[in-house]
Length: 393
Image (cartoon, rainbow, N blue to C red; front, side, top):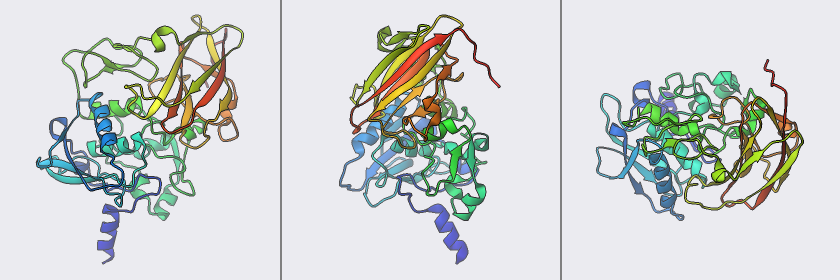
């Protein structure tokens, strides 16, 4: 009886109050099951009080536009998922396509009734169905995160917080604190996870879809185009539209070589401090399907100079872990394709944000973003350049 109860709990654990629940982690062969030819067959079920179908269809389009994955509504397909919209359901998806590599097929259920009404939360579950594991369960997670394994075991959280050594999609990209597949540090109370780089604590759990989230899907499904484009600034040819590149945040144009606003949002740094205020509020522009409006600027300096940035004021920003309502990302680290530490507080919760930030990137990308249903806010920052190299170590 105890064995049967344990198997039941592992397969169908209860949902978390934050909107993303435990999910069944199966054996490696089944976890690595891909959707045949990258086609996800689905159908909707249930009669919710609030219809989530338009949002979910937008999320499917978001993935399709950036990968070789195709979503096809077909409830009779031999390999399919049922998207259960009923309000009393949880928020979970099994990892990987139905069936196994040797015998793909059948039906799995993706429950969204208890999911938070946030674009990235549903993307999180769709990516599980595609075979993507949690970022905080990667085999290399202990290099980046502090997680008490003893506490994980004591509280019975191995399903969602244990190391997934069986994962086949975990090491296709660098670890990204800002991945949509990572949990918030306050996902559990009391918290059991934090970033080893304390500046990245409030980046974990952010629900903007990161550059590497879609790249991971493309790598796992071996998506490609007949011809590779000469993408710049870390971009790569977009399998969802082979005429252009998928670009890291803050770079635009078909080849990721264009500045924001057609160049009008480029700030020229000088040796003396200058100040810029960016007002932010959510507006649907047609290309921000992820539920966030972003305002990008590039700060440029003469070659060889170090750019310095100070956050002077955050007006009406919501200071909360994961910085999901509004925030600032300054691409000041060497790798600008991964998410740099997000800022939404100017207090003891994010002490690094009160200091001068020195950037190794020229130009340095600054993004001020705001989520839908968040009231207008404003960020003020100062910037300059100095004739001094940044020392590491």
